[in-house]
Image (cartoon, rainbow, N blue to C red; front, top):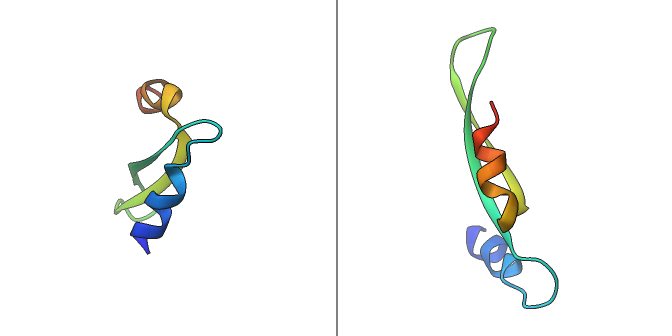
Length: 51
């Protein structure tokens, strides 16, 4: 499944995108979960700097 997602992100038409995975802590249980986001490559640093 991951190969298909990566292959579709590398199209030469339009913007380039990156898959960002962020670790988020649950307030209820305290356990960590992972959330995946697809953002344009020029906005990756801004996205990761946010809390």
